[in-house]
Image (cartoon, rainbow, N blue to C red; front, side, top):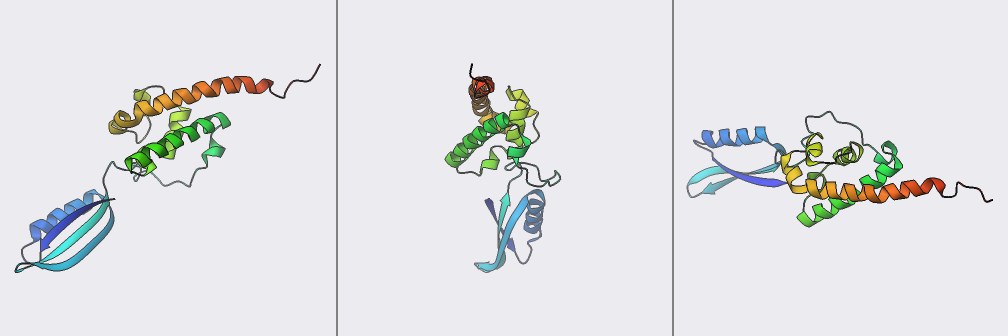
Length: 169
């Protein structure tokens, strides 16, 4: 959450009120605190607005709301294992940066990265909600992690059909 402060004179504060209203209309507002105060001889409103900046979250506010998805049920076992590795990477990076994990990529975006499969930065840009800033900041890291996870998953998948499936001579 980000904060922005406004002071609006009680008398003659129309321009400041218009600025506040424009700001409120352009952001996702989380909280508004207002207090009547005085600065010298001027009576004014002091307003603190808590908001989520446009583009800082997933930009899916305009998308229809869906129920919570259990990706363990939606993805194949192999894809879910890779998805889980990407979630772990996302969590580590988010903690390091002090931001919520969804600021990097949403669960839906991670699933799309795994299932498309995304192999280039351009592929990432085709996933809904992933813009140039996220691609520049996180794209290469996640593509490298995806490639490494796929490389380790491929030998394991090739070895598993013969495990326990054969009969003794």
